[in-house]
Image (cartoon, rainbow, N blue to C red; front, side, top):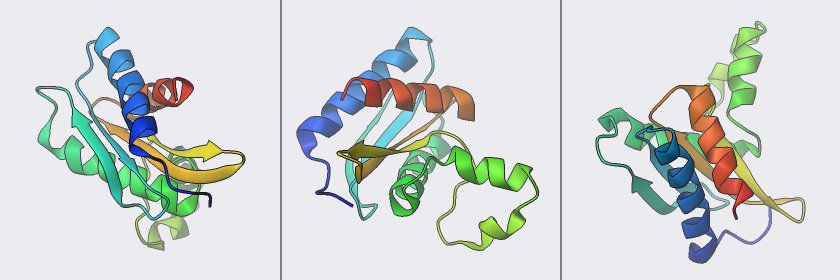
Length: 130
């Protein structure tokens, strides 16, 4: 792990996520956590489903904790690896991505509100603009 993501970077990432989602008319919640999975920044678009607020945070925490996209968990289960579900804090849905700087994780972003693939698309857009 590297030094934790700062507030300036989190706001840029969230702005990229929101811009991508709004361009597609998707209502989502976006959460950005530090290296320990603690919430640093949170934002949601109006009319985002209630459950997505907690799910976005959970996806971000899982991506930071395990230093990998949450898609990995879904793919592992789909390939017949259910033991991964015994790990604490696993979220088997795309949309959680670690934030890397210099090859080290400095936090993670989690997006929830549409399909997992669409959540991940928005998360990637946010990271592209960091």
